[in-house]
Image (tube, rainbow, N blue to C red):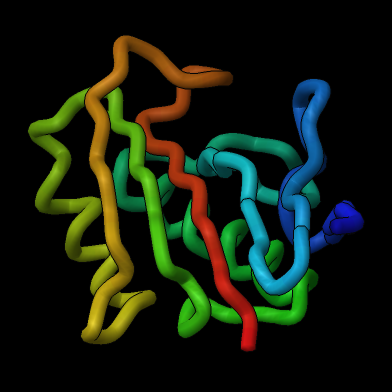
Length: 126
């Protein structure tokens, strides 16, 4: 099955050797996004602002792949401080409706560029 590389200027450019997303058949695998603004490449301030930017970035990549958050089947969230779990949950609820996708939340020591939160997605398109 052929791989299609997905890229959009509406999300931050990759800061390493990876693609924003890869589509294989009807599945789309989005790379992790942190709270960088796509045009300035500046990090949002604070965990809530970063989480909002993360979901905006993911939404832009999903749209570039021909999908939306309605197509998300799995999300993984990485946080440097799990005491921010409730804040990130609240931000996620602003972007997703029930039934929610499957999810894992992982506490990590650090993230690229000093980010406080990162997330990646898997979509299945109709």
